[in-house]
Length: 512
Image (tube, rainbow, N blue to C red):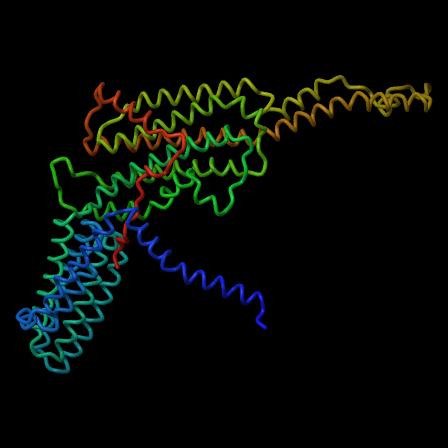
């Protein structure tokens, strides 16, 4: 008789296997729905591979190129990337590395032909060692590693293939020429597909990613304050629900964006100018992203304060609800205004934004000063303890009394009881004040983090203003300012739906 546990496990496994096709189809549809450009890119790669395969399938082309047609296929697979900048970076690196390696290999071939057979072998071995060592060391140089790492890798590979093969192959010039032609054919197909057939630009992706990060943080900081003051009881989110939290979704993409921003900025620098106003300082976008992440860390801490074990009672939080809500609303509006400024490539009214934030900070400061007992309980209690009338104890009474005037034991006990009665109200007051302070301490941390986030927002405003200056954003006109205000108001949604936030779901662009 089979064990019931084993039978149950077998049923679960069968259900998983039966649901696997549906889950696979759902995942495939979800990937394409998140970014339809992925479907287009997949079709472009398939079409490119079909075109380059004609070098094998068509007999006249195969006779002219031969077995080296495989290099064209390898070039398409390796070079064709998701964005035009990434394809240009890898394609030009591959072409430049191939040309330089071929030229150097022919120079070494010329020297070895003038030498003897043995001397030529020694010279080739020494050249391979020196070039391999120097090329590998050059890859550690930051500038080369950032821009030409793939080119150096191709240079090293091509140089070794041609140089070592030249010792055994007589017609090395023909071999090198055929490989160069096939690589050129593959690069040409890649450039045609990536530049002329539904191109995806790295610069636009970086631009849109910066806008979406600001919009996501605007919803996150507004959502944190709304949840803190509007919920009856703040409960710790379960592990399964935390990833679905819209507040978490708003800043998650920001925290993971450092490497993506740097990669997109590097690839965008390889892309051609498509108009007179399309040359942007992409490295400034990276600095804006760094300032946004610095601001996002404060939002993460603010969100974490919602899940602390000790929470301030709702009645105490209600005393500071209006100024905190106003400060969060102004910070959210400021982030949305900055996002709109970058999206439309137009300057924003930073002075007006700073003025409104300053007024909201002053309101919160006035509200905190109006309730000093909540935040200064222990200090006030200690002051009241020092100012309370002191009742002499029995020991002090005995010390102050004359030795000749001895106090009866009954009087000493009465003095002790009186001292205890006088001390109990003072201790009770200290305990009460300490309790109020412990309850108000979580809110003090929350308010401090909110103010810290607003202070860090000033750095984001400075970087965005610098971006507008170096990128020659359009000047803000009175009519434009009203338009920005309308966009800010209509962009806010109470439900904090994350559907409007652009996600930077791109393929990997890193050099191999």
